[in-house]
Length: 419
Image 1 (cartoon, one colour):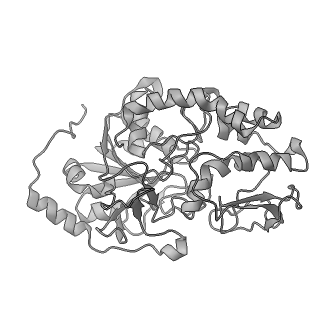
Image 2 (tube, rainbow, N blue to C red):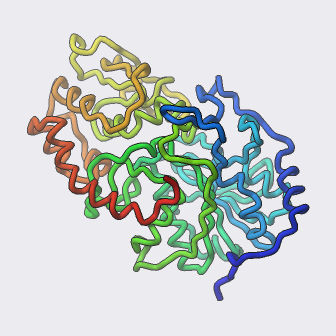
Image 3 (cartoon, helix red, strand yellow):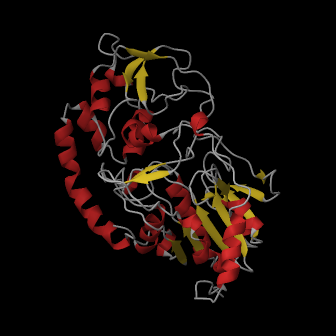
């Protein structure tokens, strides 16, 4: 029988305040210099946002009553934190909930692992968090979807992951599988919402379902312009779970959030997105992952530079040499000089830029060696590669996306929580 955990409950104000105060103890500060990330801040593109964004994890009065006396599973990684009022100190959500006597039974870790150290695509093993003793279950690799056995002793699953708003960033695929597994096991899912740092625009080709995969599971554009909570509502509402099953879903919204605000992530969401510039360029440069061009993995400027040994070194004067580092044990073109372009000082993008990709294709030594099969998986269609190979201009390629984007925006409107 489904647990009715989302009914209104009376929770004494004094107890709620005490819990919030307790949760602000023992904060740690992320070394922003080390991670090249600035402290969490929000601002309007044209004017300062006086009230800071209150992420879902900080809305404790809204969700703590729903977790009392429940056996809780949580999908989390290094970005799953609760902030103090000045947004520079924080505790991990698992540590916070345990300190508040919430019965956290299990952590489910997505790609890159619970602490966010693993390479993209690296297989992860189950284990135990050494700090808390809570069991960790990997939901990446062969076990992308939690099994009934792994969910058996849970009353609710909390999803709290910082996304970056791109279709091929796999956290939304993990969200899909968690919702699907919980729907089948009759377990509610609670999503603690977080800002989308690329939420200010929508762009790219719509995925064709025959090219569905873990880096693209739904018929959406590359950049969808939704928060993780809004996206969860779309997964449910559009019947995208297996056999159209519905998940019992509760989204804990943010306060003071508008999608046109810029949002600087205080913690890098994965090893190869080290700063705001990389996150902003990611939807444009990730296409290079499906080519023989490096997007900077194996350097300190991942997704801020691109290049390869096969590009014309008279056309491209910037060069770099990828080496093994955190998040890239075996980077593309390891130890070889790559000629390309440095984008670290580019202005913030408000659309996908295809000119980098088109220019690289036009200047590569052997065009037959430029694309690999993975490009179609990332693009979600064969059309983009065909257009580039046939010399179609960026303007005309973008025009071919217009109808699909218009239809997506109409569908998307039903699930938006914020302006």
